[in-house]
Length: 457
Image (cartoon, rainbow, N blue to C red; front, side, top):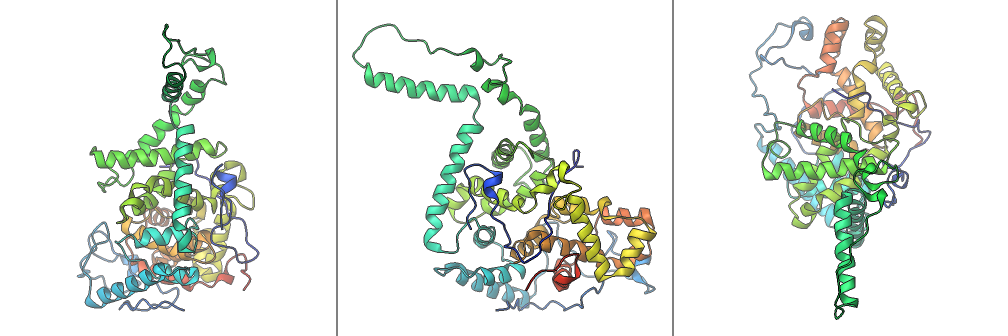
């Protein structure tokens, strides 16, 4: 459960915007922002927009409400594993190989064609080889489109991150120890031949651990103790089924420590937002993808790269985390209204049933969908596929996110139309297993001008 309220924004755009607005400077000091139809070749069935996809109960049967009068049947097809693994056809293997070749070609060019990369990402990025990690960095604007600038940009940003960590995450005692070492070395160079008693380094009252002064470094350090404990608890619960995040191995502890550093540093640099429970879930896919990059240097710097990309991702929705902005044009309530309008424009019957008949409003189920970018609604591997589509959308993450949320409603339309308040709320708060490719196809087929705002051509 979220602690308190997870807040987010979404200014109502009056024209097409860049996918990631240049807002990093307002979020993190020291990190200034910079600024052909792809054929998947798969053998997936093509669905009509709004066509409902069957969902299956844990026992393998379709529910009475879902069958729309069709006799129940046992689903014989094998269900995918929790991490997305399952039977793969020869056609799918060939399609994945073709997609990988196209992506490798695009990423090897001196100047990256961002529009084509967005189309490839929307169709799904291949796993392995570090391709997704590189593509996400480009789509988030962390890497420039010119390959010649990659090394310089990465080096500078990683150095900035290391400096921020040293300034903001080290305890006052560790900072004092490092200063003392530097001071001692300097004195040794000057007075190497001078005999006499050692000089004691004076500690001011404000630097004492028991000092109550607000200017005390220790007082400021202890202010974050409760937040650190909350972050630790949340990280322990992050994807408990994946050894990458959970358990007490040195590997999982190292990963949690890196994520803890990122979340705490973000909180200290953004005191108006601080840390909100659930941010760990948004960070997890980024850190996982970057840490599993096959390039050893990139994997070793996953923490620094993840921090910058986490900030960039939140820059598109940071106002949702501010409770004071809830009722503003950039607050979460405005975003939920946009979702409601999008549903009404695409299926007024379902909109009327949910909002007027059942009184099941988006605040009751879509708040978590939007604030956590769907990370709590699906298993980990499908999340990565959905994020490919979110990051690859030329109109921005929030635009595609609302489309996917609307598609989630359309894909269980018959169950919702036959359900009451309790049944529908339970269904939407525990969304059933679904064919992700069909879900994304429905989302992509929603016209941009059917929402509560219009995008300029």
